[in-house]
Length: 190
Image 1 (cartoon, rainbow, N blue to C red):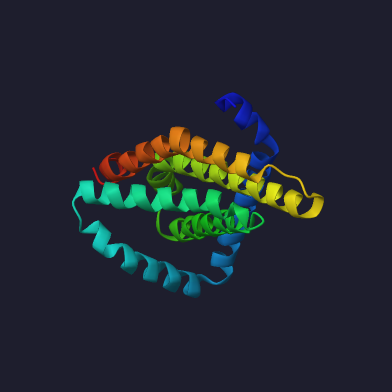
Image 2: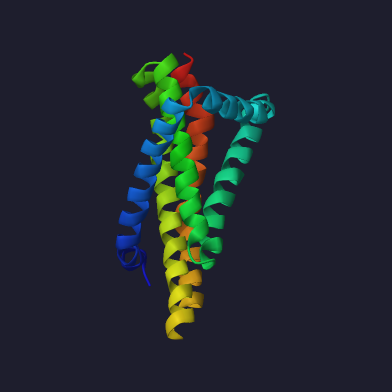
């Protein structure tokens, strides 16, 4: 199956994943607005967790960011086999975090600073996340079809999604990591 055909087969899953992600962003924003102290504490813990990475040289940071994002997107594909639940959780968690960050940024920064920090690499990362979760959810659908109807193309779908991951998603994740590590800091802190 070529790339265009595979993407076409994902069209409804991409729409569904996009809607879940958008709803999760709004949910994260409103939860953060209603629980600002708890949200700040959680994000502060997250910031402390990331502090050692910030002290690394840029090439080490690139490797960490790329590996982390690659592991997340690959897991969304692989663990889609568990009825598509893990990809849904990835969309909810990542969207929620982005929404909470948007709220906290609105309290301390301008919208333009927040968007400058997120958009250059975020457009790529979010697109890759949505595509990988769409593939994972499609795999989950095939697993359910296999169980319920005794048919389903689980193995074929896994192979297609892994090929898609290696040929398309992985290179885009590397590009996003390069932008995040080498370009965004220069835009924000010049």
